[in-house]
Image (cartoon, rainbow, N blue to C red; front, side, top):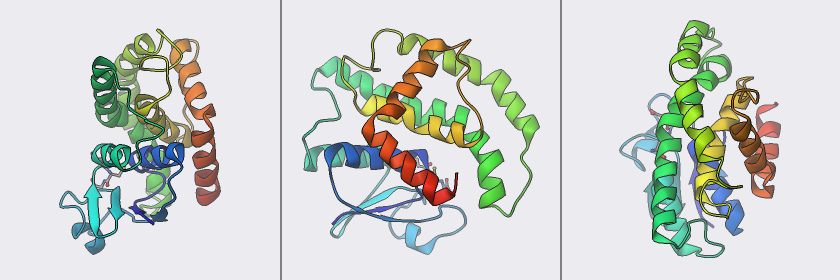
Length: 214
Ligand SMILES: N[C@@H](CCC(=O)N[C@@H](CS)C(=O)NCC(=O)O)C(=O)O
């Protein structure tokens, strides 16, 4: 059985877990805390990040690369579109989610949840979060609002990897006590709820909440 090394609250680990759930792949989740020097992580990922996916002796880092591998080892149901433009736009939205969206949302989780629960109870830097709310949230959410206004799902007419990648970091925002302001970004707020209502998301999120006591 494959092993996924990572912490379930990581948006990148969550992305991979939802893909595995969508495809019905059984796996073992081995919890790895990425902070501090982790000898077991160094041997598997020179970038010292989670997740790492282990299939037999083969150890593969990076959520985006892992998902591409899983798509080839377990092709059905596909999470990437076959249309070249939709496929390419999915890759871009995944990149946007993993960079700009994570930079916008995860600081809230880091300051309010991680510091308290995993980093020795340090207080949240609310000034930093006020800056993120002013400088990053509006531009990121405005762009996404336009993206998700065209149809039910982010790319084409099917739920897929773009939705999984976009929906995952919003969970960290939620764990930090935040939600998309539906009065300012109504399409985005509804889209996030739609993604979370997907059975794969619901099941993974329920397990996460039980594991972290939320
Ligand atoms: N591009 C990587 C990003 C992974 C990543 O940043 N993981 C975080 C946890 S959410 C991590 O391991 N951080 C530890 C560190 O940066 O030292 C991926 O998609 O897997």
